[in-house]
Image 1 (cartoon, rainbow, N blue to C red):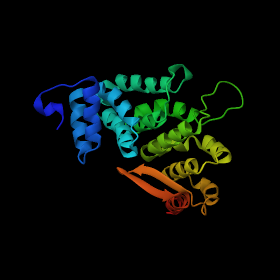
Image 2: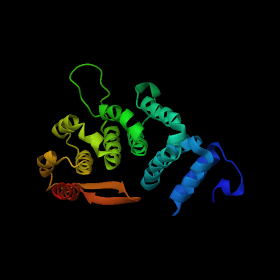
Image 3: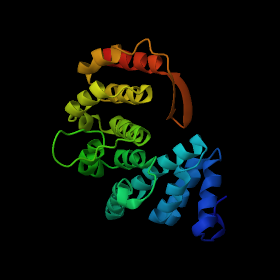
Length: 239
């Protein structure tokens, strides 16, 4: 049970611990929704904290919470969501001094919950994987953080595939340059979700790569392989 049911309000460390407890429970979604109704945007720091959990399931659920929060408050308080997105963008700069391992994924989760936010920030999210020959760039060279960008784009592609289709040139570039199996797996999911049939030949190059891949979907950590993910994507593109 969380504090709303006893007419209490928590803050700081107690609130963070309450959220961690809820994210470890079976009814976590229902309880988080009720907690968001009570606390609103005040939960963002606690969600950020939980996203750094060493428990992969808890961390993934914490990221999902940003989507719940966005759906709940974006219509009446969209400015708070924009402030949250700007905070994420700042956290990806060197000036922040932080280690933003899951921040791009959080951005994708927020964007997937609000079409206007998705349209406004899609260019920025893609800029983190776009290597440009001249001029300023946001490209993230550190692979683990760049993988988080692909995870975020994958979340976005499930809800707004038309936005992904507009970035075919960048996706083509990434297929030419990326070699990491996990990155290719998420690129494959993005292509499948967006129904980009022209990328089928790129995917076929990896049909025999059995590198193990773990990913979060439908509130489960799924153990698969690159070959299996590629097969599923090709099947979807053929239907």
